[in-house]
Image (cartoon, rainbow, N blue to C red; front, side, top):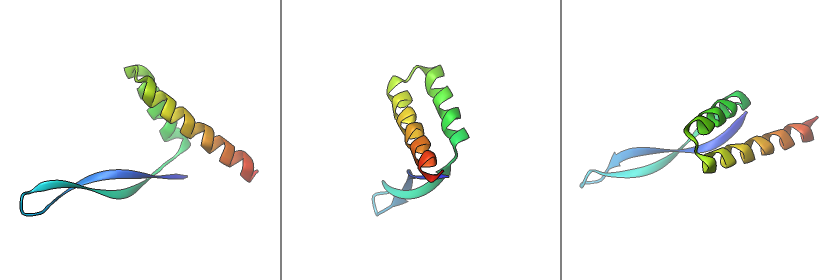
Length: 66
């Protein structure tokens, strides 16, 4: 399982400004494949590259464990 940082908006301050904070999400290989499918369907080449690079890192990590 891979842990990636995710961003969440919290309402803080006297002026009700949105301040980003960081939380963590766990995504599985299947989750990345679903995201890649969505990126292909919407035609987002940059997102496809980002997901593909992440999948390559996952595969290298898994191969190193074996």
